[in-house]
Length: 292
Image (tube, rainbow, N blue to C red; front, side, top):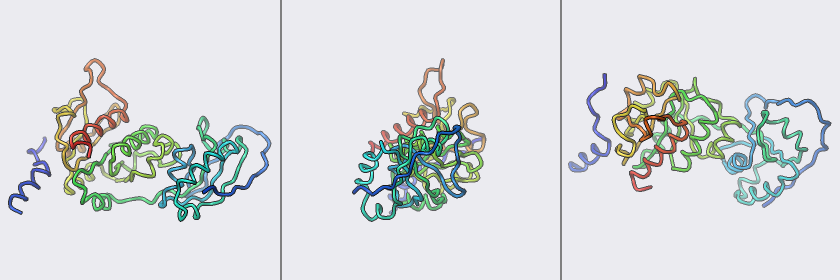
């Protein structure tokens, strides 16, 4: 049973106010063609591929790069990427190694489009939700996304891409039901994995409680929501909570939300891919505060 309406954090705040350059490369000879098989990276590493994910990872000072591989055709692309990276960061990158295209293909999963660029890197250091709240404490219009048991890496990557585009401060996922932050997710995120912190939590409902304690207005998305997303109040710190396609929001996360909103879709075909739903909700959240 839902509790009484919690005052919007902005309302509480107002009430209180009334009272108070190109890197060199080395080449290796092409290897003899053999059967197609993906060779996974070493333990404790991730393999990233594609121009946008690689460019973002190379520029990210929090990302430790262990090896940088490219095809001969990608040398110009890599030169352009490196030219945009500050010298202090560029000096810390490993020497690029030019490989035969078949060797690069062996480094990534089947059907992966590597665009001639593959890197081996350390995973990004994890971030606690308390650190995220501290970082966003002084941001009055902070925006955060919460995914409740969304497991597909392509969907999570696409959500991250939209989160970066609309200036979200973080993406919270459940650790037991989240895809690994590896090359598949990074490729779908198109570089956003390096810009939007992805915080893993063990309990989504408790994470929502923490967000509320940190001044966030928590808006869940569901097709049976009582309020349309374009009519929902999202003019202060806002957290958007989305459930997996099909099951939707689970009971406890749903009960923790301040408001359940719905997208104004056609009742005859009311379902959207979660990444599309997230993009629409993010747009409405930014629109409600004048795009700030």
